[in-house]
Image (cartoon, rainbow, N blue to C red; front, side, top):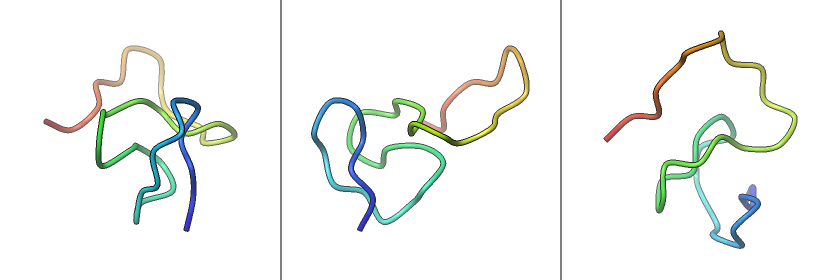
Amino acid sequence: MPTCPNGHQSGSDDWCEVCGHRMTGASAPPGAVPPP
């Protein structure tokens, strides 16, 4: 299970499901907003 830079475990590998932070190594387009 991926862990975000804030230490949360998330089922998603692009955005943290807990805090919405972008996961390290994930490529997101500039200006992308994490899901609510």
